Image (cartoon, rainbow, N blue to C red; front, side):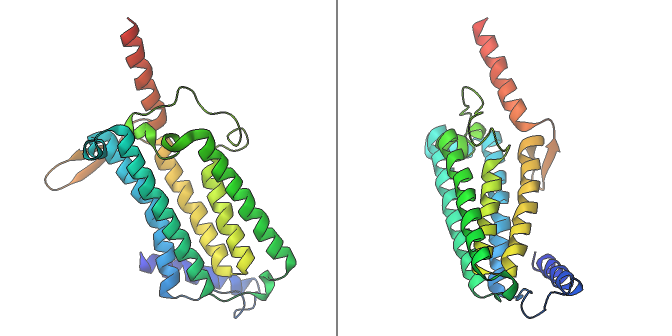
Length: 238
């Protein structure tokens, strides 16, 4: 992980040099604090995807907590706490980074406020529309919504929570005037794009053996869950 981050930072700094951005004011300090923040950003979606898939296939959180709702609430608390810790690490890392003269001034400050506020609107309105279980992977626990949410913000964006979170990172970067924050925002966007592909388009069946854990792609996950629910309801009706 550390070597990959080093390579990405080198590419970013080289790009800044090639476009004639002053190296001292528009580059990233390659320190441990920033690497830890990026590692935390990377860890969170990997964690919730792996844990959710394990729950779907083994029901280990349901068994551990005494029910699917309790398991979902436990996962929700964990994901929320990890998100708070990630944001703390990100803000702390930015304070250690170089502030660029090219990103300072009222325009960037107000832009930071705007993107941060807009991002929070998307995130919070999504959580309000979905509820706790809808937001925090309740479908992996068998807690399905009666119908698909189509109101705001889902009538504006397909994935408002991911977009909103990315905008919050961007807003913070602009507010503090940190090029490192722009790099982190790009990193978040790419990471969420991969996570989204994993969540929405590929269902993995976990097959455990003594020496390995195989991931076998089958069909789109969300479609499969609701198709399964429809089959079960049809079977009960007959």
